[in-house]
Amino acid sequence: MALVVLSVLEQRLDAVRAVLAGVDVTEVAARLGVHRSTVHRWTARYLTDQLVGLSDRSHRPSSCPHQSPSDVEVAVAEMRRQHPRWGSRRIRLEMLRRPVPGLVVPAERTIDRILIRQGLLRARPRKRPRDSFTRFERPGPMQLWGIDIVGGIELVDIRTGEIREGKLVTGVDDHSRFCVIATVVERATSRAVCLAFAQALARFGVPEEVITDNGKQFTDRFGKGGEVLFDKICRRNGITHRLTAPSSPNQNGKVERFHGTFRPDFLADAEPFVSVEAAQQAVDAWVEQYNTDRPHQALDPRLPVTPAARFAPVPAAERALVDLWLPPTLEPVTGGLPEAPAAAQSGAAVEVEKVVPASGNMSLAGQQFWLGPARAGQLVRFWVDCDLIHLTIGGTRIKTVRSHLSVTDLARLAADGARPAGPPPLPTTPGQDGVVEVERAVSRAGTVALGGQVVLAAEILSGRQVGIRIEGATLLFFDLDTRELLRTRPNPIPPDKTRHLRGVRPAGPPPRPSTEPVTVQRRASNTGIVTGCGQQVALGRVHRWQTITIHVAETTLAIELDDGETRVIRRTTTTAVRNIKADRPRTVPSVS
Image (cartoon, rainbow, N blue to C red; front, side, top):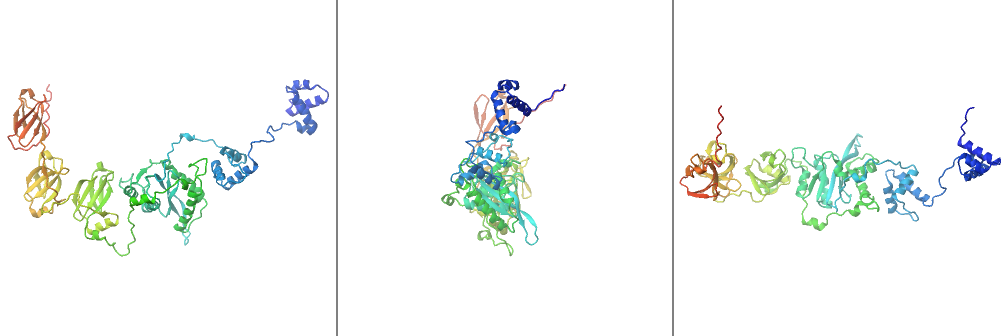
């Protein structure tokens, strides 16, 4: 006999029929393994609804006292349908900003449950926990601006119908998220970006720092390593320019988050604009609403706070203390070269500041200057006129060369922002006509090339860059930093060739001889004799083969011995010092 499996509904029906036939309820309940009250409930439901009453019913309560009222759910659902990008936090902030009488503002979790219940939100697990992100925020406004460039603005040519893409230069204050720059440009060139930046500086004041990516409009970090116009504006106004790491937009995340709002809220609905001016008007209207009417959730997640409520520009009294430096505006030229300023027309000197690139090779108005990679990143000030160019770093003159620039070149430099120069770093000596100076590198043999002739300086000066003062029949070799007199030699250069020497310049103050003795080292011989300046001194065999330090003065030789004793003897020769270090001991190869 085959077994028949009864369904739950059929088992309940058999139990009810047994009870109605007179079987005891306790017996029927024990047979099915349920409580007798359950059997009574089945019987009552069967007598009321027949077979349908025996099916399973929902366990959901018929009412929930703490459930949100229906009018609250309707208001939340309507906000979500009108603004699909709004989350629970934004909806709650908007309900707090525009309260409705009699309507209780629910919590964020309650709004999430309402949206899920209405089918307007799909719960998705978070890929990364919130506490794993590293966030930063400046404690006050105007301390840090984040600046970037975003595309997507469509400009249409009304004659041809051709659509081209414009760019938007954006800037956001780090503390308040206030949009300080939103300028539409046809092409994001360095000049266009700097003009937008300059307008923001003139409107709100100078921030302490700015942070940008490594675009060529902002830096030449991955180019030749020089200074672009944006860097120059920051440097001249005392703004610290920070750069993000390559391929790290999260380090400038606040302006990137601004782009995340600008794209769907403005670009997604904007039609192509007929001109840059029309696009700028639409962007200005949207930015005004963003700054003053739209609450930013990052400012306060509990209360609606707009960026304008936390932003404050630099007070006018503080701006008046220090003038804002901006590059001069270059007007279009219709007839030849622009008229040079009066100072430049007269050949007056000007000053220009530039940063040494990574290569160490600089140029100014077509004239090149080699400073070496070791000085990369340093600020160099050029003192320029039609005769000489002085280069100084930190107030110290490092090079002076003959100028190849004309009055027209000085006029161009003045139009590009060069300022009138002060006194030259190397002033001329009044009343000494014909006295000039040059700079030369001393060769390994201790000679220099001067006017087509080889002049002996000193072997001890080999490898040094020295200055040479030409006074009639005398050449004075001196140190460029201290102007200490090193050597004096006869002048073999005719006077008519002196003015044509390479790098010649007017002479500075006369060099002065050093008052300090020259310290040299000498190795004692097998018999304990050392030789300095052509003079032999017997120290004794106890000092043989030792390296002795000698201080050579004009009239004395001070010899330091190993036992701490210093022996001073009279100098009997006038031979100049030729070597500083002692000769190295010779090694004899082993003979097998």
